[in-house]
Length: 215
Image (cartoon, rainbow, N blue to C red; front, side):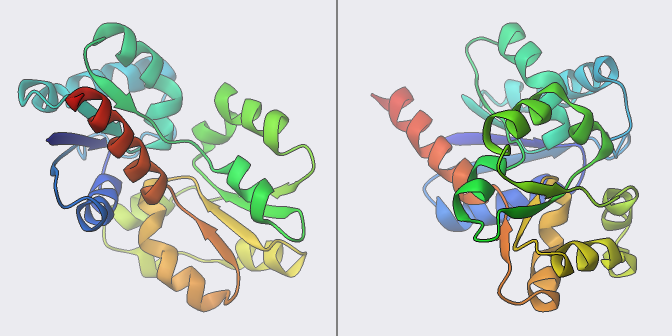
């Protein structure tokens, strides 16, 4: 089955790499909008417009399932996309606050996300629903996505993350798909820490929806 993947920039490629390993029976088609990346500082209305335009090649390829592999675009646009294209099954991603609450031994987690994701109503709902018993740190990651997009990930400083871990956080939530490329570096820097990213959860959703469509 053709599965579409959209991200504003390179994050969709990172997700697709993991999904191809987990679900080799599917064909994954990736599109991005690198002309307008990053999305994290844009208004919701603009993100809806950009995302709707950018996914057109996936719709033209008749992908019955489309992964919005971008926390920012999910928060801003996925409800509109589902209304505009009701025949397509859209899979969004969101900060894994619930998973952090389930696995953190110290009840202390660090969310690495874009400014727009942190301000979104959905993220605030997740904090109320699942994060009430967690201490949540939100380091400033402004500029991280742009650095990754331009192959300058090695310039990213983890000083605020280090401070968060030192204060008791045992779980890092990668709430931007660009940040998946930092996972190995973070794991090396903070051995034994939990690092949450959405690839496996997306794979489970793709499998569930594909089975429903094939039934």
